[in-house]
Length: 113
Image (cartoon, rainbow, N blue to C red; front, side):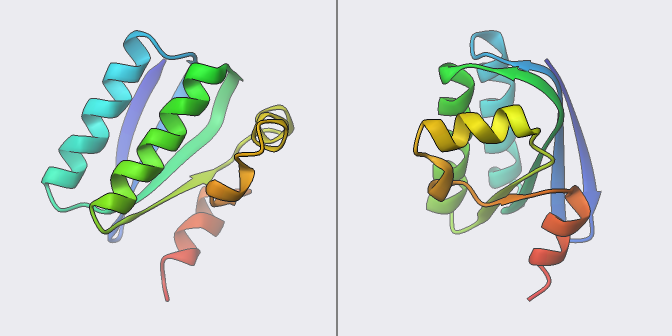
């Protein structure tokens, strides 16, 4: 999995590309989220539009990320999840814990309150 970071105003967008399966990917995502939090960046969008496969470990990464950001006083949203990934959220009954948007633009607009 590749991870790109971009600023969008006061929001940080983490774009994931590849499969979200845990393992070494877990370390990369976990480390990057904690680096952002330590830098005071607590408004985060995870762009999943280029993630094609996710397993239970990947789902655990998302839940862990949401929890870490929330515990730091921030907010993490998910953008661009495919119908396949959204189905995983629904089947796992974890969908209500994840704030999802169809696009990064829609997620970014949700921060402007």
